Length: 113
Length: 113
Image (cartoon, rainbow over all chains, first blue to last red; front, side, top):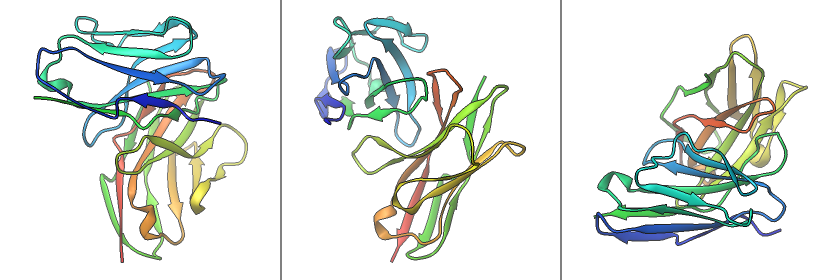
C-alpha cells in the first residue's frame, strides 16, 4: 500500500512570492489533514477535509492561505504571498475511521528568504 | 479544550539503557492517546496507540506505554534503547470519536554510544 505522497520536499522562495504544496493521501482514506510544523514544535492543524468538504479550517490563516480538495482525493495547499514567518514544514496526513490514527507524508519544507 | 504536555524537551541516554519519555494530557472527555516518532527529515509515524481496554500498550520497535487515567499520563518506555532510536517523539491526544488530534511539543531522544 502506497503511503501519503507530498511534493515538493523542499522549496525556497523569496518573500511575497506564491507557493503551492501537493498531497496525495492513502487510497481509501476519506479524511485529509494539513499540518504546520515549526522548528522544535509539534504539528499544528491547519485544515481537515472529509472527502471534498473542509470541515475544520479554523486555524487556517485565510488572508494568505488557501486549500482545495476538489475531487475528494488529492489536495493542494497554497500560500500567497509568502512571509518570512511561513518558513516551516507543511505536513499532510490522512486517516480512515474514527480512531484518529494519522498517516503522514514526509512533509514539504518551505524556506522563505 | 484538550492539551498535551511533554515534560522533557530532550532526553540523552546511553545505548542499552532504559528510557522513559513523559506525557501528560488534559481533557474533560474520553480520549484516544498516541505516540508518534519522527526521524530527521521525515514525516511522523505511529509507534503505538491507546483506544480502550488494557492500559499497557505495546508498539513497534520494543516501545510500550501505560495509560494512567487518574494521573492523566501516557508515558512511553523502552527497556533498552539503540542508537537507531535517536529521533523526536510526539505524544498526541484526540477526543474519542473525534478527528482533531493535538500534539505535544515533542521530546528529542538522543542515544549515545
